[in-house]
Length: 333
Image (cartoon, rainbow, N blue to C red; front, side):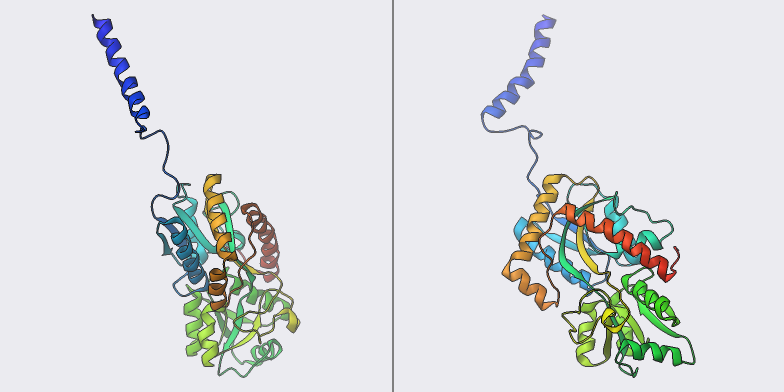
């Protein structure tokens, strides 16, 4: 009798499961819901209004429409992107925590930060790069009587006191471009690191600092108002927002290393999720609406690319920026 009852107890769950499957009601564990089925958080290591922030919001808006799920931008500025990057590096690789960042977080921080809490190659999954490589803007407040790199160098050399310049942090693209310029020309200036490019540019426009390296987007309103003047552009090409400003290379101090913006996930992000995100970002780049939005921000959309190509770019730029850091004499802090 006991054996018969025991047999019934064992058989009932099997029968129930079979009936549920046959009736079209699958067990809860039989399959997972398609990605994404809840909101996605996109961490951005820059403050509101920066080129990284505004580009991230454009991408998030389009992904939200495609996925029918909110993609929420979460700004975590500071420490040259380390705060946001570490949060994503430690996140679950489920596709619901992503990093939209600028190149320095991956390619410069390893050379300038003594105890970096993440590995840019091992701790992240490359997804897509929506913006073509570009440069940063070297500018002066309107009261500084210079209009070229040669004139700026002479102005700095003739100053009776050591001048100061600002950027958006130690190890940022602007900081390294200026330190490179100093190493190549012998000029001396003191670095004042700000938390964001927007803050640095605002203080430049107000005259609190006289020289700055800043991003292209936050400089636009101040260039148009005449409160700041563009002097040179780091990187291989002129900016769409200031086509009249020539590059450092055109003015005799070659600096070809470009910056870029890209989307990453934590290490171990499943391939189907990576492929889905990559396809949607590439679709934005190819759409007429996406191209017009990028143009309105004075940004050049990148060419559709694969996650592997982004990974290769990270590794190549990591080596190139290492050479620049050494030449500039910047030591890890």
